[in-house]
Amino acid sequence: MYINPTISSRYFLSTVFLFCFGIVLSLAAMSQEKAVERSGKTPKWINSTQKDFIIESGKGASIDEAKDRALINVKESIVKSVAEKITSSSEEKTQQVRQDNSYKVSGNYQSVINSKTADLPFIKGISLNKVSDFYWEKLKEKKTGAIVYSYYLKYPFTDFELQSIILDYEMSQKKIEDELDEATGGIDEITTIEQILEKIQVLRGIVPQLEESEKRVASMNIVKLEGILKSISLEDIINQKGTIKYFLVNKEHHFKTNLKPKINSNCASNFRTSLVGDTVILRYDSPDCFEAVSNYISAEYVVGNYSIKNSFPLFFSQNKTELVITGTIQLKSEDKDTLVVSNFEVLIPIQSKSQDEIIIKSVSIKLAGHPDITFNSLSNIIVNNSINEVSLKGQTSLKRSSYILSDSSDLLVSGVVTYFLSKSGETSQYKFYNEHILFNW
Image (tube, rainbow, N blue to C red; front, side, top):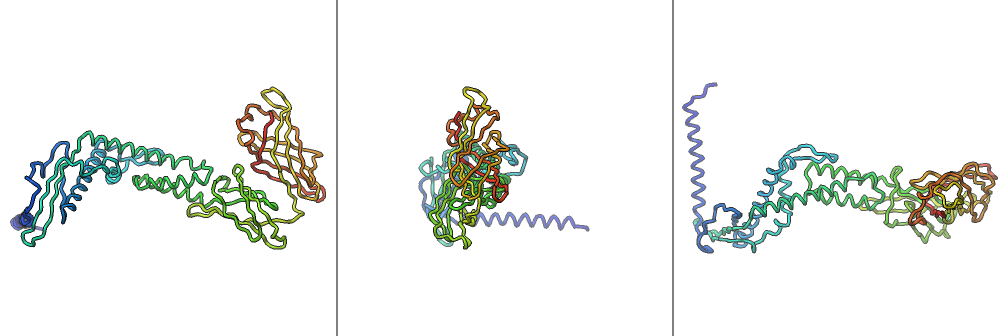
């Protein structure tokens, strides 16, 4: 396609003419404002740049409005200077993305620096009483008579102050990164409901201060933590008349909490809860409960916007076999002044509520961080319908120093008692959790 060069030149010249004409009209419009009042002689620093100063102006319908606008512009100018300095002086670092405790290059995030810098103490401390000089004019629009004020500020801002703000920024950034690392670390090792809530709160609090990539990391971990809360259930391990023992559990992971559960029942009353290790012990009275009725007790924990609850059936059958540990288990050494204990005795206070004779066949005791203590092929150990002190003799080698702790009375053990019902000929198991044990070395 052919274009006449003469026509093209004319088009270009006309475009330039219209552009220049527009500028003239704009300047003419601006010149319609006339200063009718001034704060004094026009300073030389107006519309100039000076070392160690920020010079800004603002307009408004009143002198106060113009002054406030000028001060806002001072803050915005300093924030912009800081952001540009940070970006240019540490470009490689400030364009990084946090990902699994490593870093990869990403895009520009100067807008994030702007928002963070605006929260620094120096920026928040910018005020009119620190202004070095000011000047204002009252302007009147010739055609309409409208009044507008222009306010100019000369604000001190040295290179030393700029470097101080950058240092404050870097320190605050390091603090945020440390908080993010701490909040996203160790999630799989959490043992309490309170730790989950604390991590969620920290992550939600720092999200607005993060880059987009870091926001994704924080958001993913918030979802993970909330998922743990949603999946926690109440699982009973002992349910017998007057007592229910249960865990707060997610898969195989047990959790503790200082939160008090809300307890309800269709017939039981006088609820008492206590915590032994990670086991919740719920005791109750049941004078108004009848065996022929479907009775229950419900326990509920309100955790933020989530509810952890379960309903446990109540059992009152007198034919149900019930073994109960009624006190502190004791482990006594029969070897004196030796580094390794090879002969010892375990005393277990235990009670049966069954009318059937119970013969204990084996016992396994589990203490966290130590080998299991197991007694197999037991004979002539009979538990009747009363409190019994079962004595078990052991010959497993135990390192004495491993069991000498500052507060051994708070040691907790779990385990399994395998027993035989002589009348029915059945073999069953009683599992116990977080019972106290005392080492008498």
